[in-house]
Image 1 (cartoon, rainbow, N blue to C red):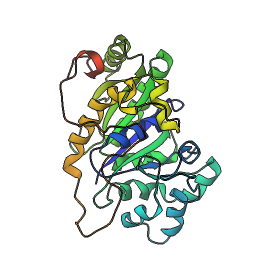
Image 2 (tube, one colour; image 1 turned 90 degrees about the vertical axis):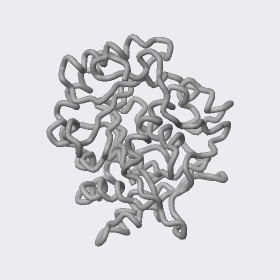
Image 3 (cartoon, one colour; image 1 turned 30 degrees about the vertical axis):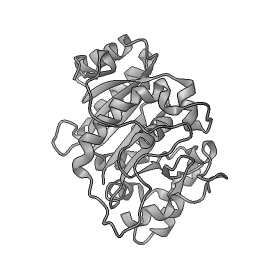
Image 4 (tube, rainbow, N blue to C red; image 1 turned 120 degrees about the horizontal axis):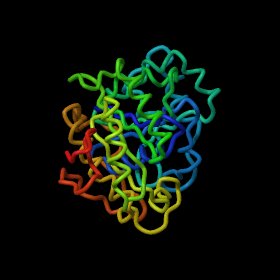
Amino acid sequence: MGLIAVASAKGSPGATTTALLIGALWPRAVIVAECDPHGGDVAARMSASGGGTLDPDRGLLSLAAAGRKNLHAELVPEHTQQVVGGLDVLVGVRVPEQSAGLAHQWGQLGPILAAIPGCDVIADVGRLGAATPQNVMLTAASDLVMVCDDQPSNVVHLRDRMLALEPALRPSSTNGTRIHVLVVTDPRRGRPVKEISDALGRAAAPVTDVHLLARDPKGAGFFAGRVDGRADRTALVRSARPVVAGLSSATEVFFVPRPETDQGAGPAGSAWPGWEKPQLVRQPVDGPSLTSAGGEPR
């Protein structure tokens, strides 16, 4: 029963792919929820488990309609679907106009997604702006994962957005929302990660740690419905393992197992095509792929 939000400060450089990736590697029962008011694309990019297409009308919109008078956590699994590989998803809105109907429910979504019995939630919240409606969800999240590439202009947007969010999220507080940064870059080049970590540290940006996430088109293809080879051998998955291990370990305290007699969200992890689920255990990471805001290895 934990909520981890995945977002970007400018554009969405892989936020949806990252949310699906984290969900596929997650060691406990999990739902990936599309909560991007600008429109999601999971229904368009992923096939349903067993073949066929996902129903774009079953998901966030149907949940909001069913819970118009009483939106509660137990409703959520009834509106999820399973993509190929066995990962449960809550499909989001298709176009921004549809999100207008959720205007009064964005504030309820965060606490509800954080309270689903026996299930964690990875929420793809897309691009965060000064007044984007999904911002109100973030205070219910234990962790916020910000995805950025290694371009200096995007780092500036990231820094400014984190500083703007700090008063509401209180990341340094025990009960606040921890902020992590994933830098999408060439896995052979650790320098951009250290440079970004140092820049955020100098600006006193409220970031817990900075990680490298491999820029890997082949690996990303698995999370866009293009299956070719084995996902677990890609640079993207290898770079994500320590990130997911750290997040899952830090959020385990919030997890309350579902009673054995209950039926709920799918099993931990997934049987992604070409996938051999790795063992997710904490392990030391060499180099700058996992650094603190000050640039030193954790």
